[in-house]
Image 1 (tube, rainbow, N blue to C red):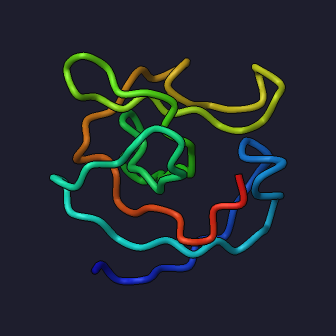
Image 2 (cartoon, helix red, strand yellow):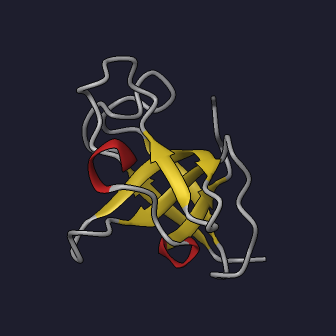
Length: 101
């Protein structure tokens, strides 16, 4: 089992699951661990090395990449795989332990 980490949500991209400033608990994962669709993850932003994002895995592509989306119903309310494309499995740092979605 991985280490527990606390993450403060900044912004509204995961609303209504996690409101702005909510503190969510995540468990770190190995890069080889399978993360199924529907899981909320903490991931390294693929284009911004100093940014981590909290998103939901929507689906896994044929080449094993993960398509991440925010829960925000407004299509412009989340910077996610619609903007930066699917991410490699190695980008997933942790999975939510208190997923409300």
